[in-house]
Length: 234
Image (tube, rainbow, N blue to C red; front, side):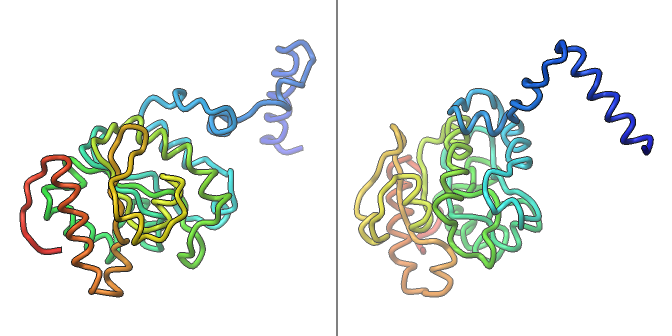
């Protein structure tokens, strides 16, 4: 037996001896993040840093098998606005940060136009914290496995408003499976927090005709939260 294996075996025996020879407690142990998700106890994570560690160890869905880095979110621990997208892309998976590719640069420009900044007053995250292969939409079981993490993020950050970018984000946060055009027609509520739905930056990069609609949505969010407009272009 190697030294490492012998050490682990001795350690195991010490644990068993400590619990009087009953190893059921060892077999039934559930890691904290799984216990939280199964029993709906978000209060066990009191900071975003603790939540980030839990997410980095999560294996609740198949996305954990192909990810490089988990992506919890980015921004101040208390933010005026939370932006929620669908999931990390290839660049995000490499860097462990949300919205860092072309879509992220575009999103930052949107935020700047209504006096928001991810380093100052805006927190950015996604429905799922691991990259779906080939940038596909997350499957329902994947999104639901991650949803409690998002709910705890919202509780910790306490945003005054939420901006959902894309149908996937709106569908899982608001539990409404309507076309994005219909979801844009009104202000929604997540608990007591107003939610504005708009197009995903990637969709607008592919179709510039959507810029006007996005600018309308950003102005709506700015009006709700009394944010100054910095420029008047979407």
